[in-house]
Amino acid sequence: MGRKWQNIKLDKGKSDAQRGALFTKLSKEITLAAKGGSPDPESNHRLKLAVEKAREHNMPQDNIKRAIGRGSGAGGEKEIEELRYEGYGPHGIAVIVDSQTDNRNRTAGEFRFLFSKHGGTLGESGSVAWMFDPVGIVEIDPGGRDEDALTEAALVDGVVDLEFEEPVSFVYTEPTQLAAARDALRSAGLVVKDAYLGVRAKQKVAPEGAQLRDVLAFLEALEDHEDAARVFSNLDVSDAAMEALA
Image (cartoon, rainbow, N blue to C red; front, side, top):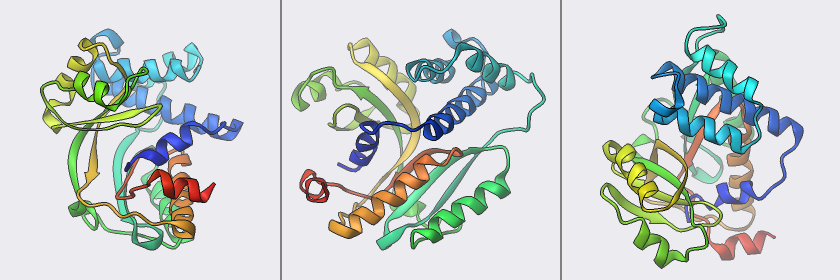
């Protein structure tokens, strides 16, 4: 249940500040997607997913158009780049953060502060990467299916594993098969919420009690940072451990 904490976050109401940070993240993803391909969502898969996600979160159409325009070279704003940070959080949890930023020095300083504040250390490139495998990740809506039914529906070329969760389940693919697997999952009648390249821990750790509370607070602080696009860790959370925190 390595990504259960993300579903926990989905269930929480978002404050105005969190909503603003979410719109910032969505805008950056749209800009980068438009920059890397066609400004037409119908011929740019990454952009299409980014726009669909923005609409799902009720982002105004004007914001979406501006973000596409920035990616196409309009507006003259600072260049957005994609950077990866890695290190150890509280109680030795290994973390990789994929970020999207227009100021790498500011972002590095703020992530260093967050790691330190929560008892962790921001490391050098490669410091924890060896503990993870590169994967493609497709987030899908189970659509009322149980684990067996979802697993059967998700058995398409390129898929190597599935983590059943609600309201979002995670399908893992070979990195080079991400786009093909995503399209095949859609063709199989599944609702794709997102698709991206990421990493998956080779071995997971399962803190409990106060240690789990510390780790979840740290991961949430990283997730809420407006420059954090994706946060990956080697955390494993059981239902029993979560219930014990409640």
